[in-house]
Amino acid sequence: MLVLFLIVAIAFAIFYGIINADIVGYLKFFLVVVEMVLVGQLLIWRYKLSGEYGLILLKSKRGLDIINHLAKYENLWRFLSDAGAVMSYGFLSLVLMSKNVSWKSLITGLFLLTVIFGVVAPFVLPFLINTIGFSAVEKTIQQNNAVSDIASLSIIIIYAGGLFLLLLLSLLGYGVFIISALLSTIFHGTEAISKAPPGGTFLLPGINLPFFEGIAALVIILVVHEGAHAILARIAKIPVQSSGIALFGVLPIGAFVEPDENKLKKLEATKQTRVLVAGSTANLLTSILFFIIFFGFFSLTADYREQGLLVLNGIGNIENNTIIHSANGQEINPSTYSKMNLPKNSEVVLQTNKGEITAKTNDKGMLGIVVRPLVKDSIFAKYTSPILDFIYMLLGLTFSLNFVIGSVNLLPLPFFDGYRTLEVNIQNKLIVKALMALTLAAFIANFLPWFFVK
Image (tube, rainbow, N blue to C red; front, side, top):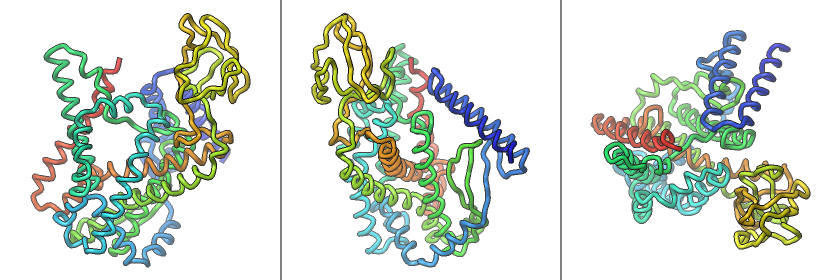
C-alpha cells in the first residue's frame, strides 16, 4: 500500500509540474499523455489490473445492483429514450426510427429539443470560451460565415433533423471553409489556413479546463451516459457483465459498463436504437437539469460575485487571475474600462483581490496586460469565496460539457453511438459508410488550422 501511495503521489507531483510549466499547451498535453501511459502501465503490471496503454479499468459488480434497481421502471426509461430520439433527430426520427416514436414521445421530444436548443445551447459556447480563454473559438464565432449561414436556417434544421443534423451541417460547412483555405495556401501561396480559426479543440482538465471541476464534470458525464446505456440494455434483457471506474494513469476519467455486445447486436432495431440513443439522451437531459441548478445558484449568489477586471495574461507582479478593482483610487467600471486614462510612464497603484499592487504604465498609458471584464449580472463570474467559485465552475462545466458530448456523440463517426444508430436504422450500408467518411474528413479538417498556427 505504501508503494502504491508513493507512485500516486509522485505521479501527481509530476503532473502538476507539467501543467504549471511555462510551455505551450500542446506540449503540456503530450507530456501528460506520456506520463499517464507510463504510470498506468506500471500500475497495470505491478498490481495485475485490467487495462492497456495507460487506461486502467477498476471493475466491480456493485454498480450492477443500482442498474438493476433503476431498470425496474421500464416504461419510463423506454419513453425517455424514445423522446431522446426525437430530441436528437427531430422529425427525421419519424423516418429513421418510426417504431420508436409515438405521438407522446414526439411531442415530448420536440419540447425538450426546444428547451435544449433555445434556452441551454446559447449559453454553452460562451461559457466554455470564458472558461478556456480560447480566443480562436471567439474568432470562429465572429468569422465563420459557413456556420452563420446555417444559423439563419437553424430553426428549420433543428426541427427537421434535431441536434444531429444541425451539428453535422455545421461541421461539414466549416470543414469546406477550412479545406478551401488550405487549397488557397497550397496553390496560391496565401496565409489563409494560418489565419483560419480552428473549428474545435480538445477539452482537458488541468490543461485548458480547471482540473478538479473538469474531472468531476467529466465523471458525471460518463456516469449518466454509460449508466443510461446499461439500464436500457438491462431492460432489453442484455446481460451487463460489470461496471466500474476508468483511470488514465492516476487521473479518473469516468465510469464504464460492459453489456454483452454480441447479444446487443442481435437485438431488433427498435430495442437497439433505444440502447444506443440512451447515452446522448441522458447527457442532454442532464444538461437541462444542471442548467436549471446553475441559474438557481447564480441568482442566489449575486452578493458574492466579484466586479472589476480579471487578468488573463499578466506581466511582472500582476499575476494571472488577479482581479483589479481600482486604479489610483478610481473604481474600475468593467463596461467602460477601455476609456480609462492612466498616466504615461508612471507608477499606478492597483487595488486587487490579492492586495495592493504597484505597476508601471508604458508610453501609451497602458499596463501591457490582457484582461476580461467581470460584471456581477453576467454569467461569466468570479466569486469572493473559493467554495462558491468551485460550485459555479462545476455546475457550469457540467451543463455545458454534457450538451457538447451528448451532441457530438450523435455524429456518424467510428466509436460514436451516432454511427451505430444510423447503421441499425438505414438498410443501405453504403450510405452510412459514405456519410461516415464525409463526416470524418470534415471532423479532421476542423482541427487542421492548429498545425499552421504561428
